[in-house]
Amino acid sequence: MNPIILDGKKVAQSIKNELRVEVERLKEAEITPKLATILVGDDEASKTYVQMKANTCHKLGMESERVFLPEETTTEELLNVIKQLNEDASVHGILLQHPVPSHIDERKAFDTIALEKDVDGVTAHGFGATTFQLGAYPCCTPAAILQIIDHYNLSIEGKHAVVVGRSPILGKPVSMMLLNRNATVTISHSKTENLPEVISQADIIIAAVGRPKFIKGEWLKEGAIVLDAGYNPGNIGDCDYETCYPKSSAITPVPGGVGPVTISMLLKHTVEAAKTQRASVVLN
Image (cartoon, rainbow, N blue to C red):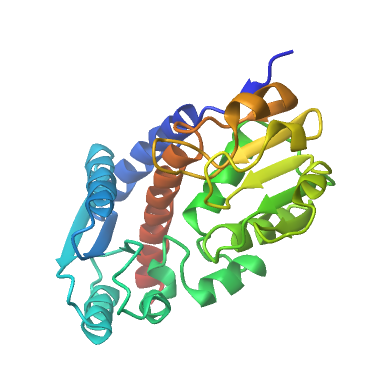
């Protein structure tokens, strides 16, 4: 039997269809969800991502505000911009496009974003709240991975999930989210000894190591579920798709897998933030 292709484009479209209805309801209540995106410097790939997010916002009837800052922007100047957006009641979500120039304290910048507007799940407080299931918005790529799993009714509880990668916005949060769904989770990375043996025990593999075609099909248990969150130059994932495909029971393609859902989750979080912030204003 051929594996299930976990089509991220279909999942993303399903989310967008729901969001259009939610946005219309909010507009009837005289509130339009708004995402503010900050880009520091002139990185062309980052510019493209920012434009894609703005375009998707507009298609859903949302608003977007793009803040472009020069390469020489200091940490303090960036923090001041974030604080202004924190205080702007018309802005419901804030995204600081990664990466920022090396002279900027990125962690300090992330942690300046107000928790209720941290729709990309990048603050340390947000990570802690996600881990303890306290209602913060999780990082969007981990949220996308869980959304794909749920869309295709794949079982998590009791399964052994191996996460290959330990970044603070992907590997670590997705591990905690899977653990909260009763998976048994092993966090591994490029320095893990006997990594092929570790991966061979996995029912679910989350590839988030940032190396093209790093995970080989011969490492997989027969029937494993593969969610490839890697995106390397040339539209190549972290898994060797050609060899992983025949060993898996379900697999995400690259491109067209986790990526499209990640953007949709960002906008979903922004809409949820708009509803939450409006409710807070009404209650006060």
